[in-house]
Image 1: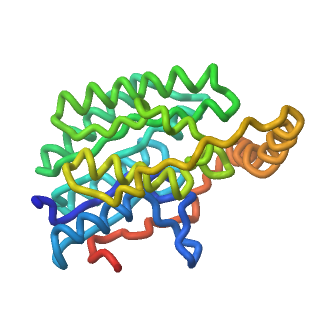
Image 2 (image 1 turned 180 degrees about the vertical axis):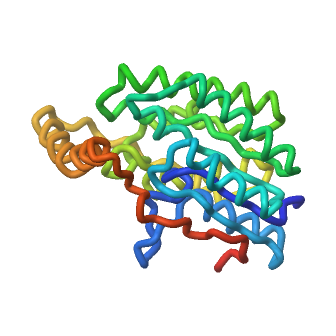
Amino acid sequence: MRWRSFVALGDSFTEGMDDAYPDGTYRGWADLVATRLAAEAGPDFRYANLAVRGKLFPQVAADQVPAALAMRPDLVSLAAGGNDALRRGFDPEALVSRFDDTVRQLRAGGADVLLFRFADVMARLPGQRMVAPRTQLLNRAVGETAERHGAILVDLYADDTYLNPLLWSTDRLHLSAAGHRRVAGQVLTALGVGCDEEWLLVPPHPEPTPWLAARAADLRWAGRHLAPWVKRRLTGRSSGDLVTAKRPQLGPVPD
């Protein structure tokens, strides 16, 4: 296997929310992939995860990308822009241009680069009419950028399995443990590395919820998850303001 080091960049998707270790910290697809790559490469394999929840693409490009380039990894994953699409001041032209430039920098540093087309998360969230076209634009740009720079594309959007609500956590925005396992399996498949077949298994789709029960669940979700998100937007805060990268330096992967 040609990869001896892996650096993961991005936001909550790559940090691993909401796939928790027993101690409450987050695992996620990137940790799973790193564990599998380390098993193939041996004890010299090194892994860093610089992703932090809530980060916008300019923050990822300004803070995480230079740090990753300095580490000179063999493999880099980049998944960001979803938080930007949720903001009122979203500037698609500027984001697409900076995304392309960032991938070019990473490739010029000699790394193989993993890119993602986002799964369809908006089916369960409000604001679909505004955000869904933005997500489609980003996904199209990711595919074009991957082809232009020879990056490895993981197309989650093409996988209708992600319409299963059991692949998502109770906040309806982040992946569940089963969702992260499936992403890890798809990443390893894209890399040509075998994975545990159970990672790609999908829970049976739940039965439809009666209308009244569904509306009650919507109200609970709005109070627990939507209201705090709106409050952060109004006060200019982010869920990642006090969070630091969980693996800021290249190091061995724990068992």
